[in-house]
Length: 41
Image (cartoon, rainbow, N blue to C red):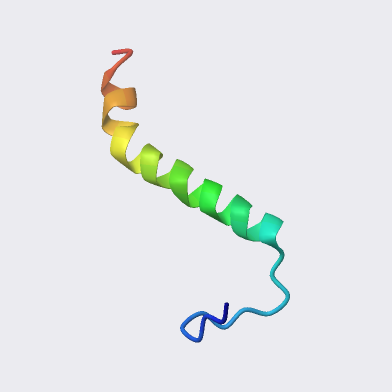
């Protein structure tokens, strides 16, 4: 299934999966970082 909006050069499904995981982790970190910082203290 072609994606004209995202030109990709030699991308593996594993790379896409890892990218999605990293984006998800970054999103959770951005959402929960105030709680994590304020939690222990």
